[in-house]
Length: 340
Image (tube, rainbow, N blue to C red; front, side, top):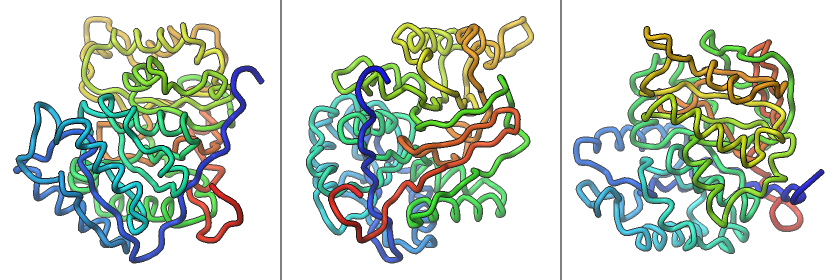
């Protein structure tokens, strides 16, 4: 083992029926025309058996530049939620471009004292990675409230919606491992093989940005890890470049496997002018690194997200197109000693 020793995993306490889940503006603003989607998200969480509250900054029309508020103001509200013992989980209303502005203002002692599930993806990837690096907190890379639970979920077939509700509820309340995530025919084996390791990742541009800060995940924590990532927008060449950054900083030499989400709105992928597919790009950068790669898995900006709990051990079998969570993401209500 090189680098830092792996962290003690900080699991949040399992949620119970009636526990309070707060939807908060941790990055982008709420636009008035998305208010119905937010109301749908509240209904989804209530159907799961939770009480739901909106944090004060989550107010349609409130905006500072591209954010719901100034970074320090968002951090104040976030810290108040982290310190409030009644709040048992926090779900981001949406992604955006703000988390980088307050990474240094988060009350990490409050997290260590009372870890809570924080749910979201996109810009919220930064929170998962940085809080995992600083405290060992399991991050819930999962659907956002407004575009996810209240948006993509509503457009999904009823059977899928019910499956997602059960999956998310189980992830938050059950202290047994979930096991295999529900696979679909869209999953693709880009390089065969099996791996087991801690799941680390997020949107790839945010992984690169997080690793450029003093709150980066220690390189040694990637030893044997299963790296998961997705991307939206930009160019195919940008994805190639981000993967090259992960190669140069040594991450690709350490991981034991890779899981790639469904790409969304990326220009120059697999079009008619002999441009590469996402699989071509990944395998080009990986070179002769013989690690399993599972592609086109349902997480990211393209639609409903399978949850990817950061820090949890998983088993990957690319050829069998399977990804299994080997540990629970939450701890029992009563445990001896701090952290669980």
